[in-house]
Length: 130
Image (cartoon, rainbow, N blue to C red; front, side, top):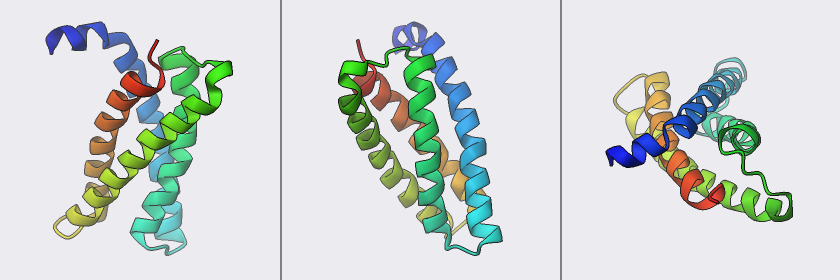
């Protein structure tokens, strides 16, 4: 495990930076929809997730993994969206369950942590692999 972490230190660090930017985007969209527009928190979470997912694909493809293949763009986008949808399922279940016990924003943080781990592993193994 340690060797895997070592070999992915640079890409994981970049993925973390992209993830931090996506977190700001995700929380911003979530706040606007949930608090300002009074949208139900699960729906706000799903909408925010897709906005952040779009940003995530672009920056992970050109900067983190530097493996955007124009001849395989549809395949990469499809794989990324598939990984993202599974992350969405995991994070939506997490936010729904956790919000029964804790403040919705803390539940959102837990949900984002779950999807962050899933999305890195999925991106590395299935989307931007060499």
